[in-house]
Amino acid sequence: MTGTNEARDGRIGNWKVGVVTSIRRESASGRSITIDVPGWGGNIAGQHTDVRLTAQNGYTAVRSYSVASAGVGDRIELAVDRLPSGEVSPYLVDTLREGDELELRGPLGGWFVWTPEQSESVQLIGGGSGIVPLMAMIRSHEASGSTTPFRLLYSVRTPLDAFFRAELESPTANLEVTWIFTRRAPSGCSRPAGRITAADLEAHGFPAALSPTVFVCGPTGFVETVATALVALGHEPNRVKTERFGGA
Amino acid sequence: MVQHIDGNALAGPLSDLFTFDPTTASARCAGCGDVSVLARAMVYAEPDTLIVRCANCDDVLMAIVQAPDRFCIELRGMTWLKIPR
Image 1: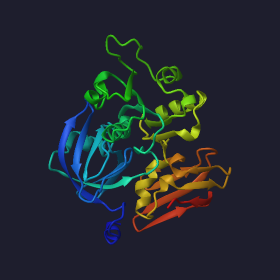
Image 2: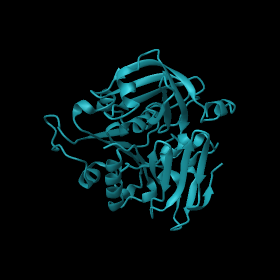
Image 3: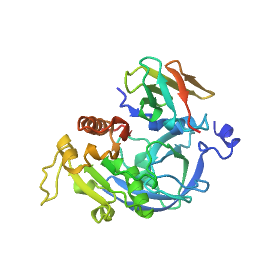
């Protein structure tokens, strides 16, 4: 397989070798990883990459991870949450060190993306590490100077589980952030801890009448609950873009 | 029971075979006639197999099996595939 791919230079599907340049802890179970990937060539906000790990006996495991960064260049940031039964994420969260090499292919996927040319309002709804591609959109929005209104609903178990907490606690003028805590809310939070509901979407999301583009990313159950509620609230199904990553 | 994901996950595996982005390609379901981008399809992933199902009627649109020496793609479930260029 590899041999065949190497013969086809320039394909997105070619595996590239990246080098980890820095690692930052995001939560008890997650961290962000910055990687230099020669040949990556930049990516649009929302795209993902496949990461391939190869064991000494030749066994390989491939998993997809959203890219938290956007723009030109060969340096990308991933943010990964450890799935206890996972084959790849425990290695990325617990073992990988700065200077280590990692095989990647991408940028992948041109559908779950936001580009600065889009002028409609944007509603982002993330569950857990589903924040990652949405963070790339937030960063792209800010970097491009876009004044399009953005709103984010970010659902996490507890405040300690939030990724990109510092960045999201001081959002820019065109971004409004609403936190949903599902297991433990911080003191002073008026909303009791609990899973996201249609009432949360109605209270904090852009109304359907505004025809926002909505991006929903998270575990499959979260995405399907939210997407169903959005359509019930009158959002056009075609304006609701979803990305499921399985999990709980 | 495998937890399904969606057609966004096809981008990597199919990049081994095709130069187009499968997530933005639209397919017409041979079962119900629904036309949708593959990103919206439901995907049931096993280590060497991807089953792609119509989000509207759950019929199989496409099956991709990766063996050590070949890929096998079954496309009986779609009438056509439209690829933006």
